[in-house]
Image (cartoon, rainbow, N blue to C red; front, top):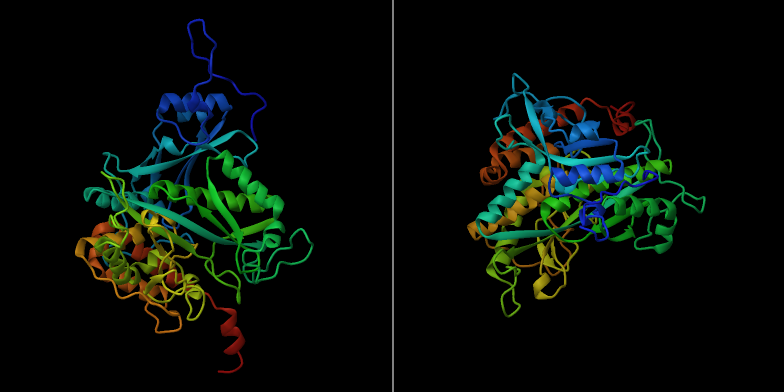
Length: 478
């Protein structure tokens, strides 16, 4: 909620009319601490959320008064925060992972370009995304935002700049505080439960007009730009497409969008979930990633030659994805539930094939003019940490270009009814991830060991739970 009055900062103008500096009106980001102080004061901001994504993409951090935030206060989080499983446990040592005995602090460095208001809070509140460094200033290799920055630095070393555009699917479901009961579709403005088969239906979107208005309003207040919003095939399943841009900025936007959509849904007494497969019998939710690569000097798309044809770099990028994405799948499908989405003959691919405008392949090349030529990775699920999903996908393409990996011929028919090319379970995916040393090198060996250890621990936690299927078919039959 905006404060009743804005306090304008009026610099002297030597007799001319005082005017408000342009940066104060920015919905998102300032250049330095001086601007940050003025920006916060102009909006009457009382509290600051200093947040950063953990391995699951959950916002972790600290809240403080705005005056303390701008007084050069040192911020820190325990390193254990980034070694925690989704259920709050910790992995065992082994396979290159060692839990730090001192559990020392990591310093939070606010990225002021991400400073924005928190529009769903009643008191005037702002948020800023932070990076993590060691006490001596070294970058922390195993934190998600730094992993993506490491991959982008590898592109920069080659004089390249990747461009991405994520598409995020999610479900709206009825409030369900008891995890023993299945999730069900919500009731829309018609008063009836939402049904499936409403792909691209405007009426389906209109069922949630007021909620979507809040999503747009909250997004605008944070400087988050939605390209399009549609109703997907699932019952109460929506998709938001973002404009293409810098991978860090887009990962930040997905990170903030997830918070925004959840908060907007709660305002209307329903849940928004980014689980890959939240409702049995309904389609899964994906986070498709469109990717292209530009030459930093010329600004031209390296996937297209001067005559408009595909380049070797284009085919090598695809070849790298075909070879390494199965090994990186644990970063694109990070939970046991993620593999329920990846089933044969479903809309989600279980192959590592590619094709022109072929949605049954893992890697689709959409129809476009040569300047916009791109590769869509259709494998990631919406439960993936956006920083890690982008890092994994871009890393695989870069390895392909570095090693000149040849792509297989494009698939011209349905690809998802053939053999399954991807790991079928979380543990199998972790095994492949740990075996790919090229991938670990570009992502960071410390991150690779930490992430694999977390995923193994999460699987063991899952194995402690007895499912309804087991009670249904084993209780009286075996």
